[in-house]
Length: 280
Image 1 (spheres, rainbow, N blue to C red):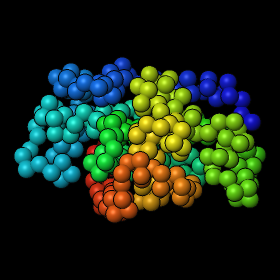
Image 2 (tube, one colour; image 1 turned 90 degrees about the horizontal axis):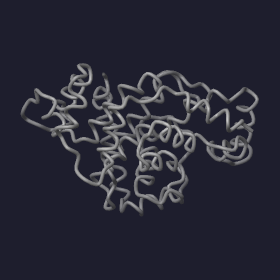
Image 3 (spheres, rainbow, N blue to C red; image 1 turned 180 degrees about the horizontal axis):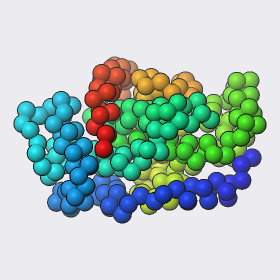
Image 4 (cartoon, rainbow, N blue to C red; image 1 turned 30 degrees about the vertical axis):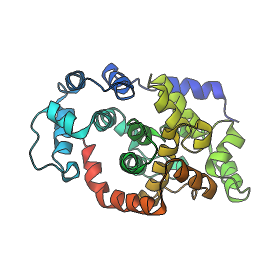
């Protein structure tokens, strides 16, 4: 078992997010439409972020025939949820691009998987018959943030025990983590989101991305399916999707097999372009 107090302490020692990012998070997750002027003011004095937003707004993915030349127009074209994800990526990308051998992740693997999941979430918002909140995109981007801390506590002995539980015990990687360690990376990710003062909906989307029925809310199902789609498209397959959980998530969001296949195809085709969106 891992010392949970030490784990929580390590999570609390992560560099906090800037106030501007938490302000954006609150606006994106609010029930009332965010004030575009305030959103613009938050990001327009960051030159690198401004360049990223303009690049994204003028990409073929935005499907616009006219060029966007200022931050306000970029915010309107992209939507505040996408703007928030791009802004957040500037603060977390360096952590997500390093290798995490404890999870079999080479340099860049976790970031690629996270971006693929965020793109999948963006598409799920359009296809879902159940309303998905816009912050689903950001929750999908951050869903594996718990691995950044969990990996520090996975000794060689624990890794061997997890492998045995997975390979011989029939447990998924997450189930093995919970059985042997007392906590799994999704729960830890939710704790990190809390420490970063992110809104509760984002916390729940991250915490329950492997067990959406426990989270109940649509964002949990959205992040779960985003993770599954990213696994299909960008690799990083910890386990095959549980058939029952997958079917339940699809039903909750009113998605057909054709919807799922279409989203996978679009994510695969657009992945490189959307990856460039996050170059800050």
